[in-house]
Amino acid sequence: MKKLLIILIAAAMFQGISAAAQTPVNLGLRVGLGTDISGGLAYGLSGNYQLELAGIVTELGINLYGSSSRSDKTTGPNRYTETTNLLVFGCLANYLLNYSAGNPGLFFVGGVGLAAINVDWTESSPTDTSLGTPLPGGGSTHSVTALAAGSVINLGLGYLFEGGFDLRFEVPTIFVFGAPGNAASVVPTFTLTGGYRF
Image 1 (cartoon, rainbow, N blue to C red):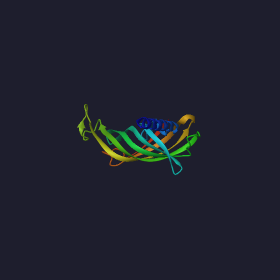
Image 2 (spheres, rainbow, N blue to C red; image 1 turned 30 degrees about the vertical axis):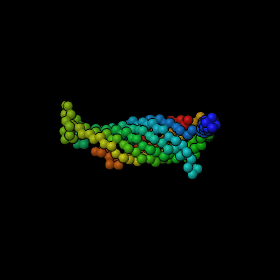
Image 3 (tube, rainbow, N blue to C red; image 1 turned 90 degrees about the vertical axis):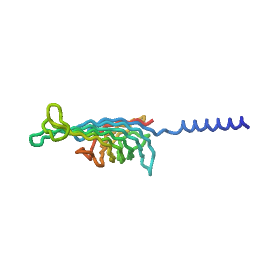
Image 4 (spheres, rainbow, N blue to C red; image 1 turned 90 degrees about the horizontal axis):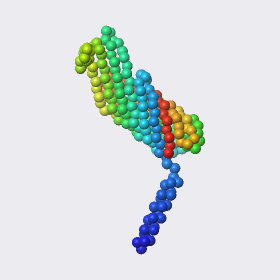
């Protein structure tokens, strides 16, 4: 009886391994670089899973991306520099229109998501001493680091090549809820990403 049970378990395991080997894996990985509206650097990395919902290919992903921006302005006799660094961890659902895994060609991307956002905002001036912490040589600086929640809307277009590789131009726009200091609450970014489906 023991031998029969071992044979049945081994046969079931072998059949499960064979079935898994024949099932297509819908996992993907993406990396990208880009810029934000102020000309700062944006970068990202994501892992995703594709499935079909109501006839539309849907990509569910975990994303890690960030952006760094800087702006200079003059108010009266004073000059100011603001820097905003964002590090975003998000969950994103992208809908891929006109996308077919077996057919290379142009497709469109539309997605929404939620995110946890680490915001690091700094304002400094070499001439204004009223911002807060004094700077060596004159002026002052003020900074805020905070964790905020937000949402992401993603739009773009892409091209699928043979073998599971695609390139996309995307515009993920981050909406930060309760942005600290004078940090921007809406951050549009422009990215070029490459992805591979295993």
